[in-house]
Image 1: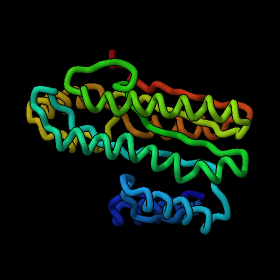
Image 2: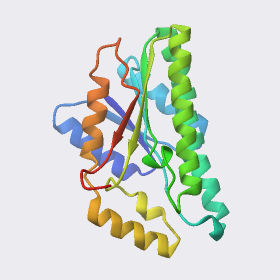
Image 3: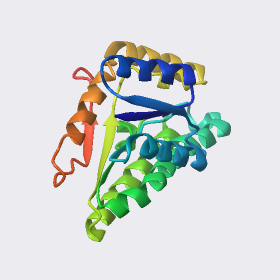
Length: 217
């Protein structure tokens, strides 16, 4: 059972329908992850529809990379709002439920840019380093508090998604598209990792995964 949340209702409808046709159970709500009330409403809808909540996957993100010298401050702020605040809104929305029931699993997509530095990703990388820190501290605090909340942070490299569509800097966009054309792999790789993390017994927390295409150095 899964509750889907994203901006585009047509995409949500299609994915939910595919799941339901194949015998699963899915529902959806449109959500702006930068709006705490939207994220809380999504979590509440999942609890109402399915009678409980076990996992949240914070996967929303944007990557309008550019050199710092380009000073694209609007894009910087958008990345902070979506990539950092969106994740924090997700954590905040589930924390009371997970704490009260003493179990739950928070999965969040960071990036390899949250592990090391890349030219052109000064702000994007900063947001992903922030996600790494927030997730690891959440894991540590849960362990200390005895709330049994598992966390898994994903650090994908070149995965063929819509991330490149947000890049407004022409030179950066061209370079990134050429790189992904050479190295990018299917997002199914991420889905398999997520399933593996969820399927572990409650006393096992796989805290981090780094996912590279085999041919990406």
